[in-house]
Length: 277
Image (cartoon, rainbow, N blue to C red; front, top):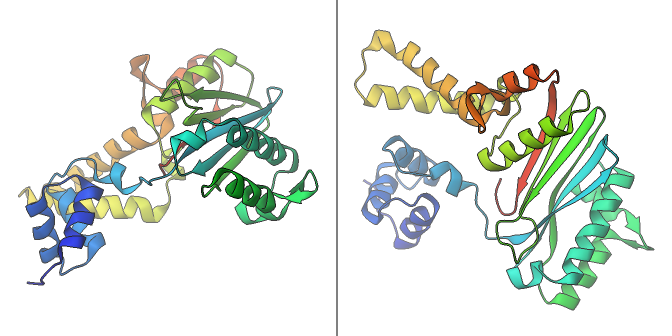
């Protein structure tokens, strides 16, 4: 059995919230393979592995810019401390950058950084803010939705800080109330994908493999394993795809059904929370 060092044990504990001895045993069992150790703890029921795995230490805000009801941009701008996040200069920078994103629609973050507004590149604007505020400031991600009806919802997790959660919802036709309901639902329930067919194949295959291993470890009959695994995969879709989630205001219907009952179709959504995947 492989020996492990306490730094790795501590790191695994911070990532998974599992007990120190459980983390040590998982690393020994995985022969030092950190990713496998996470999976071992997950199989044994460690809580919140997936959520903690996605966390970063970043602070910052989510900024929104809308153009009528048919286009909007969302930006996550990061800094090191809440103190800077609630400052006027940082928030003004975020406002300028998200407006520039909606106006120019860059393909990705590197393209955005090389683009210009007010005579300077976005990277130069960030560098100036870094120097003035004394913290590392960086653009983590952005998104633009256009067409149909685009609604938005911004949420503050602390009333003294700028919004830390932002959601865009794109419908095929205008319905402000439904768009707001779905955006608020997404803010609360954190779906990762719109629908089952939009989940990448490698993601679902990894989940399927974990469910199969979990089911075998539970001692289920071999003949029943495939059906049990399929049921767990379907349960995963209900947890992580927006359209299959139970609507928070009426858990007897899915988001897909709620939208259909109101004569609209959800085309896309974007949800950002500062510091999370």
